[in-house]
Length: 589
Image (cartoon, rainbow, N blue to C red; front, side):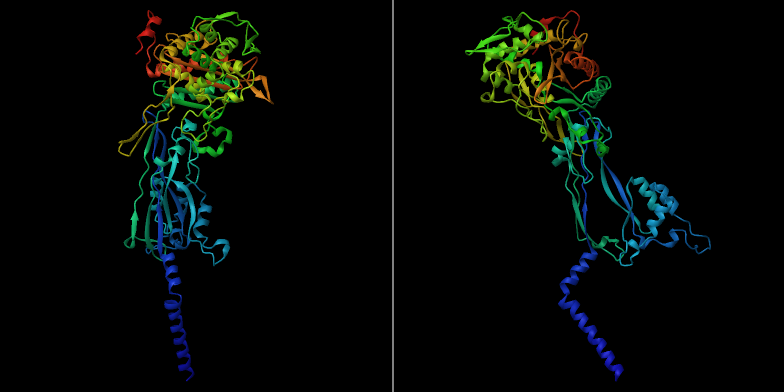
């Protein structure tokens, strides 16, 4: 009787448990089973490549394997325990595995044999990472060892084959795969592609049951981006920057090379720089693209604005004369003190005001234009507004509206004070003169194309506005040629066999609210050949170290010359014929 009762109670409990599982807790039980057996897997999309204008890889994506182990699945025979059926000892596979993944044998053996976390039987380890990134050939060798429980997950890794080349332009991805700056960031929509996904089931050992895949959407790889950057010109610019660093130990420096006709940027280099493969090894300051973020008073490079504006308004001609020895003038019923000169100057023609970089002469031209027209021409040359590169960190610089000017601004702004700009803005202001008066939008992207090389989007040259007339631009170009000629302020920028036009700039930095006599930004912006411009080159050096004042003509002009010489040789730009003269200017289309 007791036995019958016990059996009855057992079956009643069993029936009750079945009712609980299949009726009362059915939904929860189904969710638990699905959570255990059903696997939702994201299929990562391969990120597109970034290349230079000639197809050289600057950023690409390679496949790597994350290798791990389920210690509970590892067979003792794989660890060299026991013998085969023929009596020979089982080979120990751990030493070879350790060699392949570059770790110590004892470390790998511990990871394969420790089945519980902290020795707690309730904390069984089902996955332990053995190696984060191994290439596929190495992974194939690991799998050929046949160690049960050792397997890998395929991942993508972003790599930059050219290391620091154009690092500030390209940007980088962080460890989470998020784009942080540069082209990687503002072209992320095209580069990142579309992740896929897969829903499948797995067995008790967490192995996928491919026959039970319920749905799969394949990943769609990202598109490729071709830049306007030419890797060879970029290398020239970065190499010359290192010469600046070795010789002058500056706080920072930038070199920009572009095509004035299209606005395409051919090189953009900064110091300090970094390697995007190891961006975490560098200070934050090194990650900054100084060419678009740092602002400085452009100094004499800004003088093209007042000269061009006055000529464009037909207020003056190139031969009109001004007394640049005067220290003050009457303006709108007030006596204004004129800025000091680097050296004594007398009566100068407008063309000489530009070529000899007269501060007082520029002030005269600015006063002839008047506040509003001077402001309007500064805006027309791109000052006080973002150049339009597309970078989220691009600075607009500072150009105060006329209502915020003080009594001296009309005499100081024409010489490049009371205004601040990025190296990119100064560069494109000069590009407008080289491009017959048309200000172009700077561009880094040439096209977007797919895996088959088919172009999907072309980025055509875009004009922003006309700054001055074609005739005025060519007249100012001739004046800028005299800046580089013997006797000009930038004779060290001259290049034998080529007409070079340009302008130096030496601006004092404001330290503790006052202009410093020891902290300067030296710059030179020029273009060549001046009669048919192919290249515009800017060199900006922040706080070059050394005796005396760091003049643009001493610091930046020689670097321009070296960059220009290497660039014209690389591009095959032919020098002027010995017998040609300035009549060639009239032959430009």
